[in-house]
Each structure stands twice: as structure tokens, then as C-alpha cells.
Amino acid sequence: MKNVTLIHPADRSTDDLKLVYAGLGLEPITNTANANLLDAVAESERTICLGHGVPQGLIGTGMRLCVNETFVPLFKDQPNNIYIWCNADQYVKDHKLSAFCTGMFISEPQEAYVFGIGATPEQLTYSNRLFSRLVNQGIKTGLSNWRLAEHVLTHYNDPTNSAIEYNRQRIFAFDGGCVTYGHLGSTPAPRAAAYTAA
Image (cartoon, rainbow, N blue to C red; front, side, top):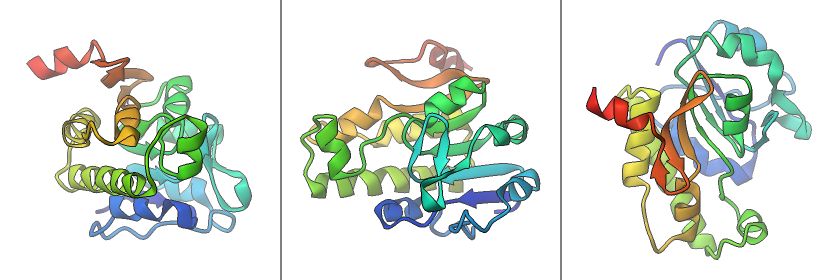
């Protein structure tokens, strides 16, 4: 893949996300403390950000934000970005961006405990790997944000896995800060119908 910047801060707890870019020929930026991320993003047509985060951005080396509001002007020129971190949807919404992204995403036992999700460690691993592989498939086949969200939500489905059931409600495609595909409550976003008919 050409002209793609991949930011995945080194963190063993997010190793399952390596499956997102497996076989894509992308070299992740893992040491965000020593990288000039703004320059890398400025030279790209697409940016993929993976890891832990908050509504204000992606957490990097040293528990500091490595992707924050200073990236917004660059991201506005990249409508096919992927942001996979907890509460990335708030970042996208607040800055009116276009992207495939996640909201609060249960990927670890501590998160499951805090949110009252009764998933076993094995179920969490299965959830993480299934999600990552589905995103990888979508990237490889060149799916748009909307089609990527549709693909993931179609196949990331297991009623016996409470982490998957929780996370399914928090997978979105956005266009200019508005949800174009994803779940609001238990139903697809209203604009999804217009895309399906097209």
C-alpha cells in the first residue's frame, strides 16, 4: 500500500491489532516519542491509528497523546482514515472528520470488569482477533469507510460473546462528523438506508 501512515504505539496489550495490517506491507510507527508524526501524516493520503486512546486522541509512548487536535487539519484532507482506539468516535465527531472508527471498545479484562461485561479472557482474545482480521480484509479489498463498517458489522457477530455484542454498538463510519453507518442503540444509523439504496 502506498501513501499510508500507520501509527501503532508499542504496547503488548494491543498486539492483536497487528492483525489489522498483517500482509499489507506497512511499517508501523511504534515509538511515537521519537517520530515526527505530523510530517509523516502530511505526506500521506491515508492514516491508520491503532491503540489505546481517549476522546482527545491516541495515546502514545509515555502515556502522552501522540495524535491530538493538531492533526485535525491534515486529517480533514484524508477522508478514508481508520481510527481504532477507545472513544475515537468522539474525536471524529468533535472535529467533523470522515473515517471508520470505534467508540469505547472492550478489549481487555480490566475494561470488561469496569463496564460490567462478563466476557472471559478467551472471549476477549477471540473478539479482538476477529475484529482485526475483518478490518484487514476490508482494507485489502479497498472498501470505503461505509462499506468497511458494513463488512465488519455483518461478520463481527456472536450473541454468546458479550464483548462482541457490546463492541458492535460502537463501530462506525463517519462523514464530516456525522454517522453514515453504525449502530445507534440497536438500529443502523438513518443515513445508512440511503447508501444501501444507491
